[in-house]
Amino acid sequence: MEFSLITSPAESTHIDCLILGIFENHRHSQESSEFNTQTQGLIDNLIKRDSFDGTLGKTLTINFIPNHTYQRCVLVGLGRQDQPISSKNYRKVLTSAIKALNNTPATSATCCLTETPVENQNYAWKTRQVVEIFQGSCYQFGDLKSNFESTIKLTHIAIATPKDNLLDGEIGLTQGIALANAVEFTKNLADSPGNICTPSHLAEKALALSEQNNHLSTDILEEDEMAELGMGALLSVSRGSRQPAKLIILNYQGGKPESNPIVLVGKGLTFDAGGISLKPSAGMDEMKYDMCGGASVLGVFQALSELNLPLNVIGLVPTSENMPDGDANKPGDIVTSMSGQTIEILNTDAEGRLILCDTLTYAERFNPEVVIDLATLTGACITALGRHPSGLLGNDDALCADLLSAGTTACDPVWRLPLWEEYQDQLKSNFADMANIGGPAGGTITAACFLSRFSKNFRWAHLDIAGTAWKSGDQKGATGRPVPLLTQFLIDFSNNACN
Image (cartoon, rainbow, N blue to C red; front, side):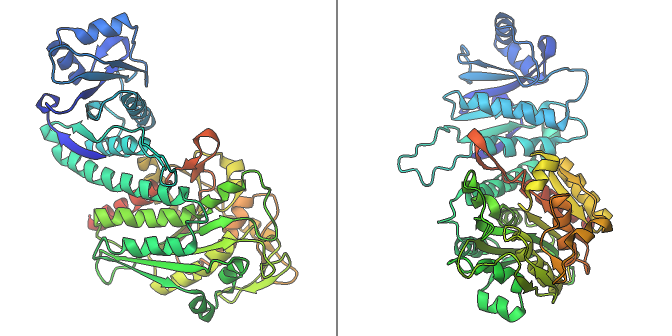
């Protein structure tokens, strides 16, 4: 989909639909008032006839506008006029607008909803949301359907932006397009089935990314190279699979050579059957989404390649399958990690932390400014937090605060959980330095406690995205989270570094 800015809706003669906001009690926004005057009170007549009261998110589609360049109009309720709407409600308005628009034959539209006052947000943020939500709502995974025909007709959205706000609008447009493309890239990777999206496929996608930007390079570590490094925990997971493990290393050098990099680590289990601790069959198809952490890291680098932020960022994606096999990990096995610490494997389905722990140790060689890992790590996170926020844990308060702030701005929220020393006792083992599970109590926290033992030498945060990376049921599919959160974190970091 193509997006552009337009300083006046009247300038458009080739766009066939206009999107306008209406407040409660038939109160007009500035653009809807002007359009109502141009059409001799058509809007007033129709909203009264159809009892459209401007309730937040309600829509009314006008399919015929006499003697006007616009063929149709979508009205969207903005709620009360006497106070700015919240960020969440603004996104609800946009979601309602694109849903109504997709139910029309329109191929193009002018969106005037950025004029709506949003609490604590500027035109850049509002413009970015239009791009993110409109393009995101049009995403369809049809690559593997033999007779797939997209139901989306839209090709172009013009965003109305006053001349005084053009600079903010351009910033929002640039960020929005980069982020929408990155989320779409991530969704497409995550929605691909495990027989296609293998570790080798992920590695190929990462190598292709490095061709898009001169600041970005990609290296792939093979199993023999990982063995030389002593990555016994990571390689123990791949033993049960016929697909060789890969360690993907993305290196974006947009900042000063002497600047320490931000390191992003994403779990890339392209399919997780649970190993010998086999998962129940119901819903096991969704375990293709166990690579959403890795897909999101690749998505962030897709955004970086378009935004050209003045930062140095390293992406590390350990990728493998976790399958049952005669050579697979067995409960009770003990493996030695790259750090030298030994791990008793009490449950082979707690494999994500095994591939992450060696990768976190590997991250030390980059002398990182911060390290953030993201993983669909624990079902316990869904039990604790549901599917709205991602779980956040870490050893640095300032880093966690920055992630909380970025999540609020990006509308990709996180909720911080404690990482207290008391939880570490649950990882005790009679036979190794630690066990790979800590029992049913506080499963998300004990998983992070495990990772914290490999993150003592740098500022570190962990994002558990098990509840947010994809949706189940009738709306089954990847969400692209936490790409918006991490991209916003990088934008904020870049802005703070330049100030």
